[in-house]
Length: 223
Image (cartoon, rainbow, N blue to C red):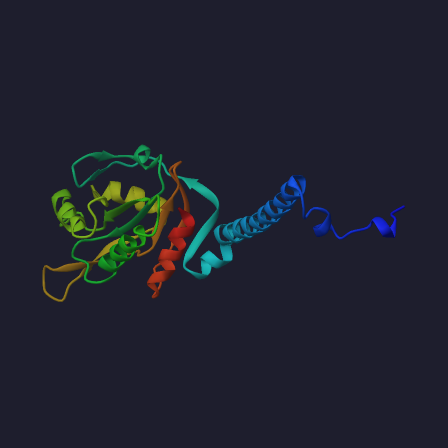
């Protein structure tokens, strides 16, 4: 039983003497650590929600598949004449899209958006443009084209058979469209971006939206 005569508020009880100072410091530190812990938990919660919210990412143009799809065999060459197979897709995240160097609009727009997004990502993915126009896009042509955007971007070319082998696995299509002048042509192709994980599995599809910040937000959350 506590005697009323011996009762003193806590701050008076610890307010004097060496022990009182130590206890006071302990309580102050405990309060700081408690606050820090609450802030940390809140930040982690917000981060996890941002990363795993499939609905939010879909609203920004990214569609994550329920089941990853392992890529299978294909043979292509890059702009430096190196042979590229499915094993080269392992070990890092990769963004893959089809395009061509004579493309007047969507291809340079896509590359520019990706390039801008790379600046905001601590560990950026490998970026690969696969040509949909192998007749005109030799490895040398691809190299000069991509250097104008980012020297780390990779360009792939090959026979129509091998290009279709990769395109088919990604659900992409491309074909020639006759031009207005006899003997000229353009290319109609899928404009989505395939997201490949470090196991060389196709895990999602990124659509280009009118808002550049959408892609930046998605890529910041993926990598």
